Image (cartoon, rainbow, N blue to C red):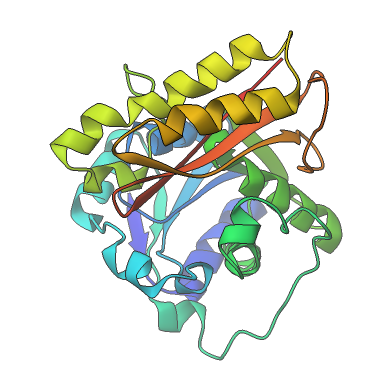
Length: 279
């Protein structure tokens, strides 16, 4: 497995792969890798000749400096894991390498980035779009792989590709979960043992919400989920939204096929997100 820190070396590798007729699969990450990330790499490996993974904690997508500071960094472990699943190249740039000049680019995603994560994390999705666009320009992938846990991010990336007419196919991958239902996340590493025991409650409540979706309105389900978290002593609900799976706009009345329940919860100071297809 090759490890490069520079844009030049990584792009040259990608150009040579393309020139030799090889297909490139790309998995962008912020490191602190877990089985969810590895499942993306494995799928990319199965569907492409070459797999490139980036490890870069992107500073411009963090609206909370403390969150950026505390984000787990486990590079040595990450590289061992990527070697074990047959990754071909890991791109590990510095912030100065990615952003030699101040970032001025702004994107317009209409209403996609105005709700949920976008409402609670100002500037987050612009930072995501900037870094993903740059990473695509560097790694030149035919296919790029994103997990559905970050569902709103996935829709933003699809919009970015369409807006900028990028020649890359976005491959959504199912949420990877622990045996107790907790969605795998790099942030889980920061959970205390007590919080780790409590957080499967998030998925449990989402499952209960799904069970209500055929006979209850969106408003009733939102009230139910809110009540469940109001009654929990340790977990704090930031939002629960029932949204159209394509537009991400809030749904009212009866639930229809394609609608999702999307949630953000604080376990102490650790913010976890998850979602579920309701029908």
